[in-house]
Amino acid sequence: MATQEPTRVQPYEKVVDFLINEIETSKTLPWEHPWINKDCSRPINFRGSPYRGVNLMNLWFIQSIRGYKQNVWLTFNQCRELKGTVKKGEHGVPVVFWKILVKKGTKMVEKDEDEDGDETKIPFMRAYTVFNIEQCDLPAEVLKKYTIEEKEFVPIEEAARIIRDMKNKPQIFEDQISQAYYKRSDDSVHVPAGKYFKNAAFYYSTMFHELIHSTGHDTRLNRDSIAMVDGLDQVTYSEEELVAEFGSVFLCSLARIEKEPTKDHVAYLQNWLTYIKDHKKALIFAAQRAQKAVDYIVPPVQ
Image (cartoon, rainbow, N blue to C red; front, side, top):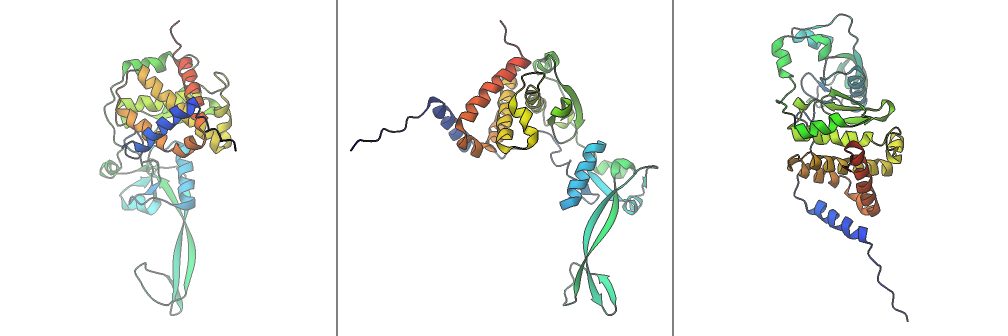
């Protein structure tokens, strides 16, 4: 009986298995957003409670398309309670809440959350109109409560030069507060301004991540992963994210940015660990594509 030859381990598998082990055994805390106000994009009411369900989706969408930097919403009456007014000509956004009605005698009344009883309960949906606080004129002491934290931003010259000298670069907008993304449809990068990041290194590593995405545009490297990512294919999305994160690490190295963000990069890769394990070659290919993207942004010296 012939003995079965052991399965040969491919060279790339050795590299990937090493990286997987490093990612799994890293003592890095769970990945955090690099900006200061990591939760300030999620819509909340003026008391600080987050919206949920369809209200969350609706208000998040409106915040984005109207460009509100604040995520706080309140009703007309709540605005008046705070000694403020809704600005003339502003249009509110509908939200809905479920209430519970109970029968007491011959009347139907709203049930108190702390109230017990065997009354007949009837769920009742009630609609309200809310306004973003940017649509309101509010007293200074009220607005101070919702002030977005900022830090002094000190540019890192080498990193700034990399961005400044990139040929055929996309439009860059510092128009966000707590998210960063590349928009392929109009070839634009959107990030928070440097003053909203924990430090300058985080700002540049985030900017580099989005610029690497932009190299996939058909006017640059025409990378298939960025061309297909809009279709929400999870495999393609994972591959493109690996390319962008590797590229960000490479550019940080070129810019001689201190290694503080490196732990953050490792933690970020932890989110993709399952995909990496199932597609070991993808990590090698992602690194190759990332290097090609970096060479586009910073052409090698001949």
